[in-house]
Image (tube, rainbow, N blue to C red; front, side, top):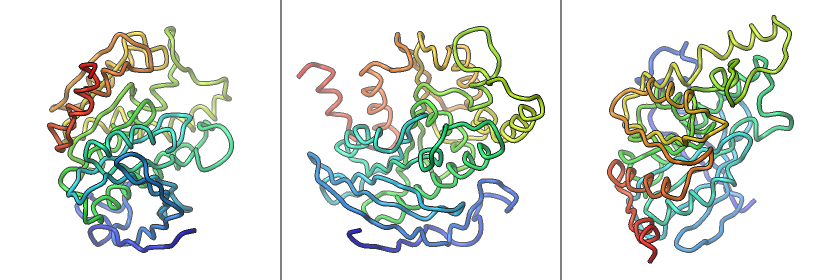
Length: 301
């Protein structure tokens, strides 16, 4: 360990303007994040910090904080991985956007911090989904506590499962100015519902276990929460996606409120490089990053 620094969370009180304490995603913004740094390294125009912070739901949240060279103030950007994956898989994206002028944060979802399957089809999935959203809200606190981040210019970029959870976050966390949701669907219930086309379906479960899982997960399904969002949304989908079939993507897109932009690509679940260019341009409009690098790359220079 290279040192320990305590960073106070932004705001004060139990839940601020977020409603009553019965809200499953409420947490104490006045508590210390207790950020601890374990190492850092340089990478072409940015510095990567390997850190963790305390989760209100227990344990610590492993995170990478990628800081552009220079003094700022910079935009802030949370980049969230898919399933199964981890924060380290998001490092190339975080580095690219840091070079475009954003302090980027990538965290591990709770399922990444333990052994076993990402989805266990019991009530523990509900607890972990709630914990992830609270941990992401704390990532907003982490960014807002930095002197080099403009707290009014914080965005979120999620891919696949991270895009689904971004819809839930959009309905809960209104300090985020813009959301990019790439190849997402409406959540785990939506993803595993029975269907004839491609995609997932619930494994063979006893009827009572299936009912308990659905009862636990449906009330916190992103497909429901995204309707409560107020920030601009950019939703990207692939026409040949076999993990998030177009019908599922369209349901998610229809549930998303205005203002929103929807773009389809002739691809599967892995979107083409053009999608990254579109993300950079869209974020330049909403949080003020500079997409010049992507523009030059697209033109072949």
